[in-house]
Image (tube, rainbow, N blue to C red; front, top):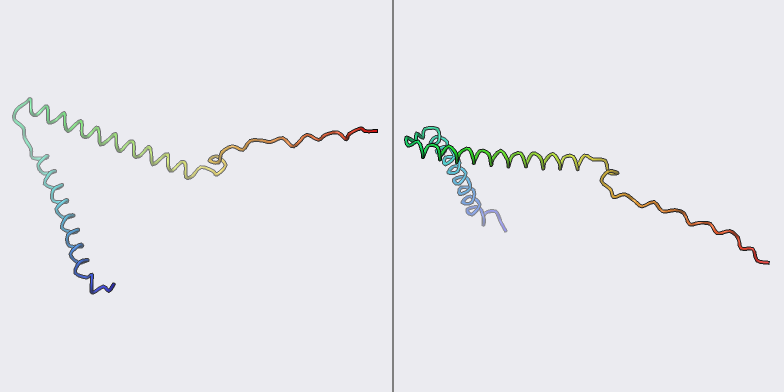
Length: 104
């Protein structure tokens, strides 16, 4: 397959990927601005909103803590000496020597 045959398709895929990334960034930016400038006058709704934000932040912290813990455990398992990670071998006793038979 020649590059000329797929050039337009590759260009279109790249343009779509860049557009999607730009839209994602703009949505995140607008979301941050909305949260920053949002003013809820109703005290009940303000409390509910605050509780939801606190719950979301707690979930994010918990998820981050789990990720850090898993990464730490993975790092420890990759740096552990080989002997510590290999299963223990059973010690086998050498065969008992039999005394020479005493036949007449």
